[in-house]
Length: 232
Image (tube, rainbow, N blue to C red; front, side):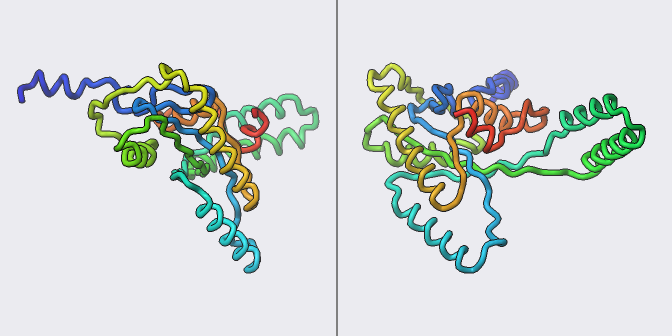
């Protein structure tokens, strides 16, 4: 392989490493034609529960998994907390505060937060469940669905893949309805366990992938379960 071939190989567009074609009505459309709905789930402090409550949660979770007739991907996203907006808010409060003592306390607290974040990596964990739907009914559909599902949030080798346009199918809206029905089933089951869950909308799903593929960039805003629920 000569140097020109190596350079061309290294100059592959970044889009080729992403299996996502677009986001349609909050649903991820893959290049293979598969659909994925991302559900955000609030964490649960299992250790603070009593032994009876823990056993009930485990039993309910087992029943939930046994009730499914499709695979799921459980994904945990850890990221550094961005407190710039919070610190800016404290600065504004400091300027508006008329009481000199309170103004000094706000300034000291602001500097404490700034120092704490600069000297320590403070991480926030978000929990997601990915619900799949494969509209293409082929002999290898089951095998391909499993591969695509568990590769959605993993690094790709950049191999060229056959692209499918599911929107060209007249039944595309029906496919969206199917994946939404699956998502509703998962959300309902998780709520019964005591886990708050909500499907991400278009903007929230877009932000999630932006954060995943730009880990060094300052995040535009924080995804929170309450915010996601309010947008439904």
